Amino acid sequence: GGGALEAAQKSLSEGQFRRARLVLRLVAGTGEERERRDLAPFSPGEFATFFTVAPGSEYRTEIGLEVPGERYIPVIGSNLARTPRRAS
Image (cartoon, one colour):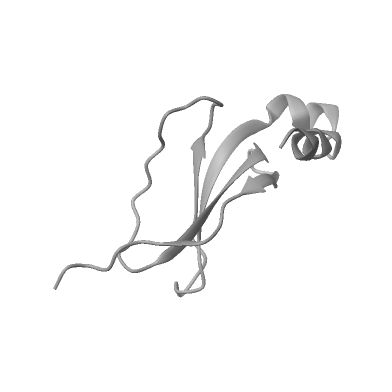
């Protein structure tokens, strides 16, 4: 939580910190051919953020700081979750 965010902020230069934004990242698990990484702006207290996902796949989420075009620093992450399979 707070300690991880402070550590992430300290790892950035002052200029990078001014450009950084808090993002929610969706990361595909091991079931995908390639790792998928989708970003969405994140604001604490937000009710919901939606991503399009594939049925029967594994994903996890992270909240981190992104300096557009330069760096991404994860701050906190979720456990791996599997989406329901497609109905037959």
